[in-house]
Length: 311
Image 1 (spheres, one colour):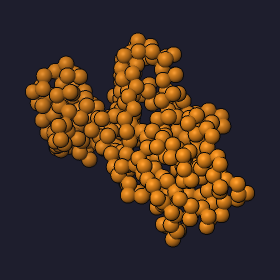
Image 2 (image 1 turned 180 degrees about the horizontal axis):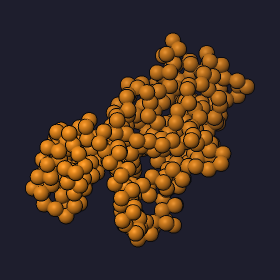
Image 3 (image 1 turned 60 degrees about the horizontal axis):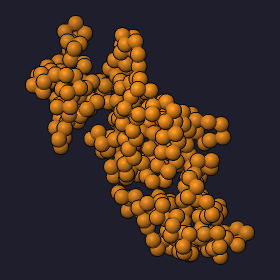
Image 4 (image 1 turned 30 degrees about the horizontal axis):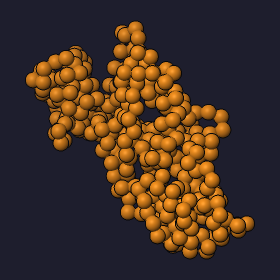
């Protein structure tokens, strides 16, 4: 049985670095130690907890179930200790750190302008990198350290990994979008029959066989006339403007970018269950002052009166 008296608490710093970096070499560099020293510390950790703790995964390592269970309470304790011993926190004003966020082009059109505007005032030297977000890579992009955060709607089609932590940002509505002069736009109310028979375009991100709305229709025994799918929202908007195609697309009141201007939005005859856009991160970053600062900033950007911001 592991006991406090027999545990070398210095090993916890190595454990933290391995959780954060997912790579022995990067962990050694972060701790200013040699790779053999970190490997030796990992052997001692394994002996202490009678578990491999980290197993090889591609070019790095990933935590075992035991390591994930340990990290929850350890992360909170280490964060408390660090906050007690260190006078300062993350110095955003003088930081040249970069943050990478995986998100769709729709989400990026809402997040990036607000984030860069806020950073220009409080962290002018910080850099932002937006990378594509897909359902199939939703957890992997965080597990493999390819992104600091992911922002999107995580559906119930895939079970959430245990390491995935999240907070809600906003909840978009779903509306039927068409060009302003579309014949269906003249109707007082769009019937379900006309809606389903119209030519539709939708966005199907990589990793999904069907757009979410079609999966919803299928659950009701219905099918629409989906003739075009694209993998970017911008492409869908352009196609709608130049054709008789219609689409069911997210619309976030007060948040949407100007690129939706000039398009007609009408209620969807059959409304799908609401979805929530969330901020996701890997639990290994729970003790990082930088990630905590950035997480707080991102949450604050979308917490204002009038927004659909769940508690």
